[in-house]
Image 1 (cartoon, rainbow, N blue to C red):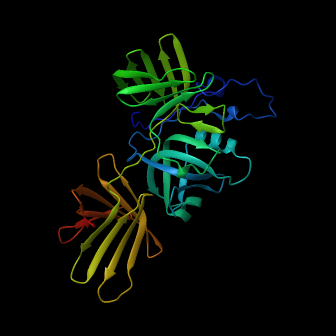
Image 2: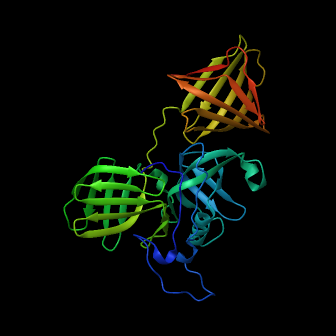
Length: 339
């Protein structure tokens, strides 16, 4: 699936795939499908990054957070309004934890409830939000797939082939002969049909889950409809610890964690206490590694450094502090990755 910055949702009365059409409700009642808005949602096409976070989320009025898998971090979560409404509709009690896989980017959190967390994660697309089995962090990463019910089917999707599995039938290997991608859809032309993925919210009627894409698979004389999830596999060689001796008495250590926490630590040979900046990091669309500090010794600050990765070294010549950009002295920073 192309990494598009477009997310739209469709009416609850005409949901594709794993969704259902429900009878009209009285004004006093609200079904789970009613909250799926038909309002299209188009995030900023200039979004700086496409980061994947997996973990536990809470969606409420005063608590919208994500706690990434295998992490001690908690980020404020900024969801598109229709997705937030749909997620809230699945909960049965306040601050109920759910499992989610969301794509988006980081920003400093400078106001409101979000300010308490320092960093916020702005969601542009998502794989899944579910109230079922929220311990999915322990599951192995999954590749991209399309799937549906009535009849039950699933298909592993790559740029080269679609592997279709149906109950009681042999697996069908469908090579991809052409792939066209746009903000509105990904169109796979197959040797025996076609697969169309669209960025529209999709509900699974067999579970309390919503998904970020719909799927239509046409094979021979069969039309299969359902939902789609992008791969949730993350392999990021950027993570690790980088160091540089700034002078004879000061060492800077930058730690980039898998949960996108960033820590800059200044250590001194004279026994002085370390000075610590904490925040987040992300790989920008321009392939720069952006490290944003949101706290300095516990005090709020917004300090941004855009590093270029050259082999095992992160290099930059500038730093932006609270909106003002300054050149760094002594040829800037050249932090070498620790082995």
